Image 1 (cartoon, one colour):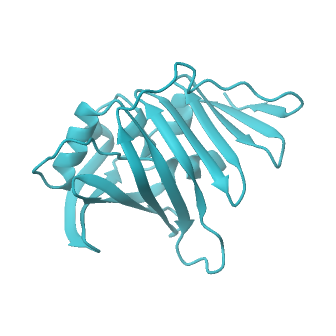
Image 2: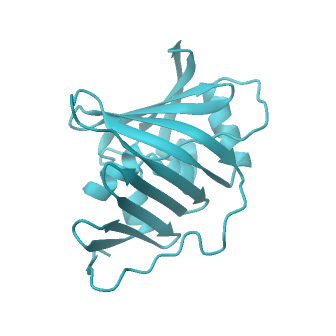
Image 3: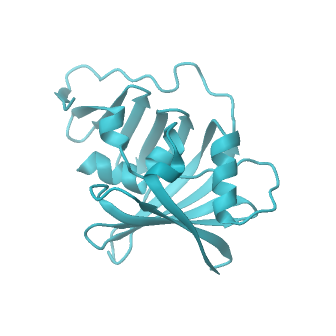
Length: 205
């Protein structure tokens, strides 16, 4: 469940640099059509948990199915997908968990970003009223076993700035996005991962 919570709360929409004159759902569809890769930074926190430090780090992705989500603070954790397998590395536990991409992403919000399937087959997309200076949309999974109720995405200046995910336990995870670069030059091995020597590898495939 830990990797699914990361993926479900993780990267969903990173807009292109081109100027769009469109509402948030249209901007999301434009993003899917025109942005095969992106990189940037994030902060992530569950709302209502006073005193708990937010996570922060950086990300990159190349659709379909390749991504890197690296938590730097307050502790390190790394999730990498090479398009076929997803590796979750926890240095503190000295453990790597391996899953198939389809098993890990499934109908999570990450499928919108990393996958190549139909958006409308997996999600119901609707516009929301603006708030906090952002234009909003809501994505609700059509399947009953997605593990979350919906995810809201806020746009400003045609770029996504915030994600708020309501999970099946009633908890809200907020992700703030910054420093986003659409279609950057990424190294050929950017999404390769080899488990470090001496760590436990748990194969969940």
